[in-house]
Amino acid sequence: MKNFKLISTTIVLCAFIITSCTKEIGTSNNPNLQSESTLSKQPALISADLQLKLTKLRASMPAGYEKRVQKNTALLLKMHPEYRAMVQRALSASSPASCNDNTPLNQLLASQLADWNSDIIYFALATGMLDFPTYDALLFENTAATQYFGVKGEYTQIMAKTFKDLKRFWNIQSNNIVLVGMHGSMLLNRDKLIRIDMILYGDSQVTAAYTADLIILLLKDVPQYQNGNHPIFTFNSFAQNAFTFSPYGIIPAKIVMGDGIMQDFTATGYGDVAPQAILAHEFGHQIQFQLGVFGTVSSPEATRRTELMADAYSAYYLSHARGASMQWKRVLLFLQVFFNIGDCQVTNDGHHGTPTQRMASAQWGYSVANDAQKQGRILTSQEFTALFEKQLPVILLK
Image (cartoon, rainbow, N blue to C red; front, side, top):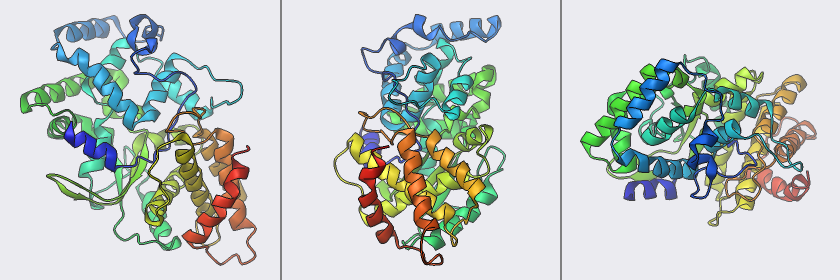
């Protein structure tokens, strides 16, 4: 679809991507997606009444929705590798011995999908509901007004403070960058669902309305979806540069913070520092946009370089005396945050660096701030980037 092509070629989704070492889901030869029996190996922790209702609902759906499963899975894989990893880890926890990304965060994500059987996964893919919160925030949350962070706004204050500090700390033009929240609650808004469906899939008003009503019905009847507040719907954070999207005009440069990613880091014991670390990482991508760090070739090596660089930007800010000025106890926490978001898919274009590489990058960023002779001086973004480029070969040996 033309609109989607515009989105996918314009936006750099610099997410804290959680990827696993198993096969990719969604390819035509992957049995995990194609085989109902494989999916059904998950515990069927749903009531018999609900299962019967889902079976009948699935049988009554228009034939086109069977094809939409593959279409939406392809979209999911293109834009959200972190969702792929969640489903993968619910199906298989295998990892090669050379790289272990079975971190506490990934273990939590797997447990949160333990009661998602084949039908629950099917409807999430067939309707496209896994994508809707991201694209709603991407295209239509374009002002700082009325923004809140966290399902109940619990991260709003720390996000506002950290964002203000980051703009003061780094020497880039940041007045036009907008910080917005991504909320699964938008899945209950029929008008928003219809709008996103028509943009992503080119559906008619009637078909989009059917999909919207189906999603709202599923959220009402399927407790596993948690009324849209299951972390899988918003386990994402990303930065984007400004772009024009017809007919909606200019979409500003922004950072999008999903409820799910902050919720789960808090659940694994990192809530004291993870929101700041994630936001500082995404702000690092805004630095890269302005410095022209991103190249034109997509490759595992290119993505790993920019992601590890953003980790280093974040750690430098978090530990600098004129940044967040975190003490050693909290520094240890933010180092663990970066370790938790490492992945083992070293041949995937979305590879962000292994857990040990991500921790090493953060440790280096911390050391630059901690070992500086002039503690009060903040390196310019250009100076820090040049230092990182020299250090990258060492980090990659980890």
